[in-house]
Amino acid sequence: MKRYKGLRIARIVVSVAVAILITLLWIEYSDLVLRSFGWIEHTQVIPAGVAFSGVTIVFWLVMTSLFGRIYCSMFCPLGVVQDVAARLGRMSRKGTRKDYHYAAPMTRLRYCSLAVVAVCFFMEVLIIPAIIDPYSMYSAFVLNILKPIWGWINNAVAQIGVQTGWWTVGYVSVITASVFGVALSLVSVFSVAAAAWVAGRPFCNTLCPVGTVLGIVSARSLWHIDIDTDMCTNCRKCEHVCKAQCIDLTDHVVDSSRCVGCFDCLTVCPDDAIFYRPDRKQLSLPMMQSLDGPRVGSASACSTTHPLTDISELTSNDKDETIS
Ligand code: SF4
Ligand code: SF4
Ligand code: SF4
Image (cartoon, rainbow, N blue to C red; front, side):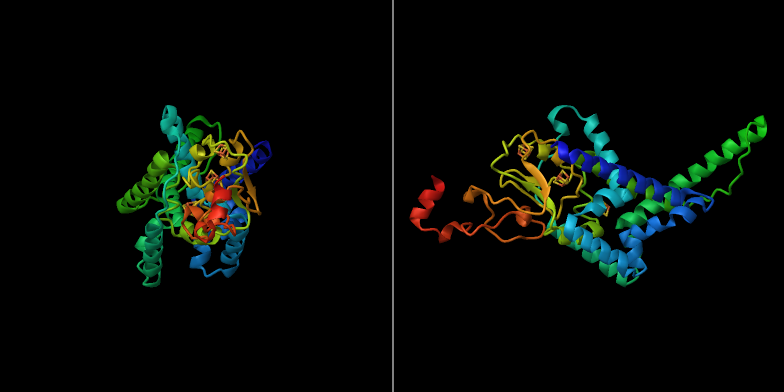
């Protein structure tokens, strides 16, 4: 749908800008970026949680309850890493194998991971949260891997400047991490990227504690992805681009707790049948509606519950009319 292209482009621009700023914040040897853009760290959920900064936490909970997991689509640098890996993975595959398909939610794994992180955090066993928490994982990767490389490149350029006299660049003291730190950063970030290469955003909807908390809130977010079954022709194009694998075209519902707000599905629909909006489509076919109330982590979490939903409450005449 053309009207959503601007929204998708804005999402990509903001996410890349945030990822670049956070990378520069950790990679630089001066405090140039820190002085001008140090505030960017205050937008991150985990540093705010560690610092008990209620403002940031409340801000993101409110934003998520209104607009869904836009934090995951725009403000998480590890989300950008996964998007890049997912895009490269799709490009490397041929034919329909590059398409995503709906997958059932792994709700138990999500809650177990969140519980483990919470318990470790309060018992001050910080190694586990440091491995799973997306901000720590990304900042450690920049500090342990990218920063030394940046320092070596800087010194090589400075050396060439000294030898040729073409420019003057100051040397920096390259800080290198321990072998364990380097190995841990490499394994954790490349594992997440490899999973994204194959399946989009599996880390975001299984192990990430931030994603689980935001998912609980976004399951009932005001603005959400909504499919109009009267217009949908079941072409499955939206399902095939959904990196969260949360579009269930059997029931025509989108699991808002897993939707990471990338807006990719909105721009591929040939029938203008999928929307990002506050209201929910009243399905014209009662049989296609959810039998249960909204459940977190369920594909029916954002489906419409209609008065005629429970078929067991219909009279036999009603059933005949409904089916006809
Ligand atoms: S779920 Fe976690 S890793 Fe994924 S984008 Fe959100 S905060 Fe980042
Ligand atoms: S339903 Fe899937 S493709 Fe659509 S915005 Fe959500 S995550 Fe992106
Ligand atoms: S892309 Fe549009 S028409 Fe195709 S399945 Fe999705 S909502 Fe339906």
